[in-house]
Length: 133
Image (cartoon, rainbow, N blue to C red):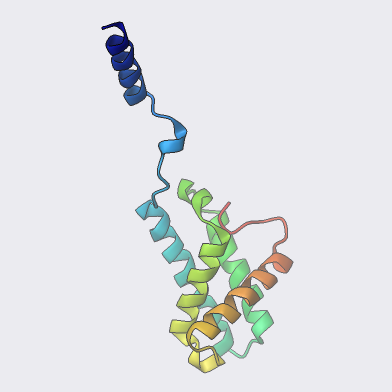
């Protein structure tokens, strides 16, 4: 009987205060929405810069700075949950869909190329900043 009571109390304690190991990493819809806004804004800025005659590097730097400024001055607590790699992937997908053909980026190869190019230029342009923080 004592084992049953002890087990029951342990079970109740476990329900009230579950261990951290059981927490699931679920994605918050507001994080996804913010990530969509960021990637749409970046893609729009980059495509517009390319159409206005900017070089690839100039367009990239301009789009990064404009998008970074928008994020920096907005108070959104979800931005700390955005992973740079996930954001870079989403930006690459969005850009290839929006204006990829006009700049020679098509399909998975185009997405992969632009993602690595974006991360490389982003590190050079804003070394002490992070899009999502």
